[in-house]
Amino acid sequence: FLSQNSASGKFDFSSVFLSANIQGQRAGLDYASTWYLSGFRTGNFSLNLVPWVFLKGRFLKGFASLKLSNLLPDYRYFFFRGNQFYWQNNPRSTQGFFSSVGFDLLSFLKFEFGRGAYSKLPRLNLDVDSVEFSDNLKYSYSKLTLEKELSNFFLKVDGCIQLMDDNDFQIGIPKSNLKLSCNYSFSLLNSKLSLSPGLDLDWFDGLYPYSFHAPTGLFGYRSGLTQRSGLIAGAFVGFRLKTFRATLRVDNFLDRVFNQNPILMIDGFPVQSRVIRFNIIWLFWD
Image (tube, rainbow, N blue to C red; front, side, top):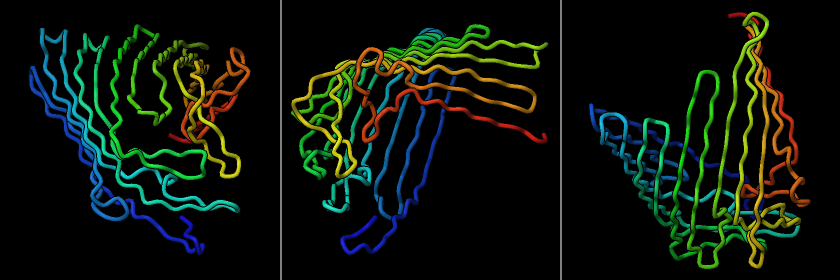
């Protein structure tokens, strides 16, 4: 943080975390929370309660979810200092309230429907500033998840339809989103070498993309943009020997195949085109 006279400051991120899992034969409660007791975020909290119950033996599981939060926004909404622009704001804590119900069949197929609202939500704009929306932004979603592991093959599919009553305060979420992740594991060289090739696909539709403001280096929202669709794909393969592990991954290898413009998917950060990542873990001794 740089103040107007360039004096430096610091923030205290002290917090307390508490998680609990209370289970019975037919019902239970999952609980998770974060509480900030000192420093910059004193009084901020997030709370998640998930009661559940088995409806037919252990084949069908019903659950509900309640999420409450009162958190200060990200620091980029508070300040900016550059050669030509300077602003410093004091946004209030963003409050969130969400509730949902759903069913889980054999831990294989899960459906969930939820609705909630945000208040005092900030955003960056192209007027070289951040603004805070004083009204409530209502949000609803339907989500379907399929996850299955058969022998050496793993598959997970997430589908989501989400609607935001933004009142011309666009927040940059797609109206629909479909994610697929799969991989297959097998062995070579008398089981000394293990390989796990896989594929990730992320398709979205009804997204208002972000705009880039070169003087500040920030991505902000603006009105008048058309909705876009896109497909982000990644391919990977994992290698494993006794003391050596490695992963080779290519992200967003379909960029500019269906659309000549780069895909801007994440707030304040453009998805890079065809990024190659190579990770190595080498155990010199056990």
